[in-house]
Image (cartoon, rainbow, N blue to C red; front, side):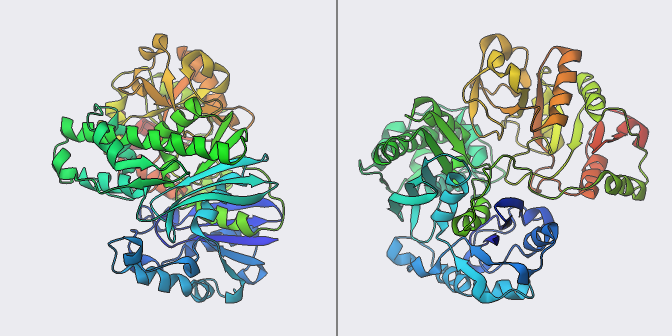
Length: 545
C-alpha cells in the first residue's frame, strides 16, 4: 500500500510516505521553503500545503500522485465545532474548518494526477497517537498532549495488536499546550515556536508561584484536567521581545514548568492503570518535546520504557496519519534520517560549482575530530536530513565540550540567547559513566543528570541545573558519528562532543549542500565536513579564528 501523509492545518506542515510497509521519506516543508515552521499557525494560513515536501517524497520513491492508494490528512473537519462553543477566542477559526474540508481539492491541485477521493481525514490526535504508538513493535499506552486538535487537547489510549483504543480525551478550552503557549507569548517569545526557550529559562528560576498554579491547573482524577485563566501580569510583567529577562520571568517559567511536569506525570499514571499496566508508554504532541517533563515521567512513572516520537510536534502527524490508515504492517521506527540526502558525486559537484577548495581525507570523522580537539567548530553535514526539530548528527554544528566558553561561543555563532544550553552527544558505551537517566536516548528527547565528577570535565554541555539533553550514539546506526566520537576521545579523553543544529537563529536547519556552504561562509566555523569532503576555513578564506 502506498500512503502519503499530510500535515497542514496548524503549523509545521510536513509530508511522509509509506510504501509497502516501509517509511521511505518524511520531511517538513520548512526545509524546502526556508520559512521557519513552514508558516504561522493562523486560520488564514490553514490552506497552505506542504506541496514541496510532498512532491519530494513522491520523487524519492519514484512515484506519481496517481500511483498513491491513499492520502491521509491529519485533521478531520467533520469533528470540528465553532470556536466560541469550545471556549476559544478565535473568531476566524471557521476558516480552518472550511479550508480543511476543501483539502482534497487543494491537494489535487498541488499534486496533479491525484484523485481527490483518495484523500482521507484522520483526527488530529489519532494521527499524533499513531506516530508514536505504531512506531514501536510492542503493545503500548499512548499519551498525546498539545495545544489543540479539532475539539480536544489531549488523548490517552492504548494500542493492542496495532489497534487504538481511546481511553480519555480532554476537551477544549482546557489545554496544557495552550497554557505553555500563553506563557511563551507573555515572556516575549514567539508562541508555537519558542516554547523550548521557556523550558531552558525555567532552570534559572525558583517555582515560587507553584501553589497558585496547582490551584489553577488540576487533574480531575478520571484521566482529564482543567486549566483556569492565569493572570500572568499579576505574577510577572509582560516582556517585550527585545526586553530584559528578570528573575520574576524565570520564576514564572519555573513554576509553570514544574506544574506541567506534575500534571503530565499524573496523566501518565492514570493512563497506565486504565490501559491495564503495559510496560511501554509512547508519547507525541508538541508538549512531548518537553524533555524535562519526559525525563520525569520516565524516572517517576510506572512504565519500564518511555518512547517519544522524534517528530512529536505537528510535523509528525504527517507520518502518524499515514500510519493510521495504512493496511500493511509497518516496520518499527529506527531512524529520524528520513529527509533529503545527496550522493558523494553530487556533493563534490556542489563544491566545484562554489569554487571552494576541498580535500577528501582518508577519514572525515578523524579530520573533524582533530579540528574539534583543537577547539574548532565543525559544520557536520552527513547523509539524509532529520525528520523533526532535533539535529542528530546529520545536520549539526559540533564543538569541544571541555571549554566552559563553548556555550557562549556557540550561541554567538548561532545568534541565540545566552541562557540557552547546548547539548552533548556521547558514545553509547560510555553513557553510564557520565550520565544518569533514560538509556538509550538516540533522539535527544530526555534530560539527564551529569555525574558530579564529570561536570567540570564537560562544562559546556552541563546546564545550570546540572542536567544535559543527551543523544546516545550507537555505532550500528550512526557509524560516522560514532567514529568521530571515538577519535575525539582518543585525542582528548572525552567521549562527548557538543551537538547543536546546523542553522542560525530564526532559520530552519540546513538541508541542502548549498545551504551548508552558505552557513559556512557566513559564520565563524572552522571546518565544513560535507559528506566525505573537508573544507577548512583557513584554506577557503585565507584565515582562521
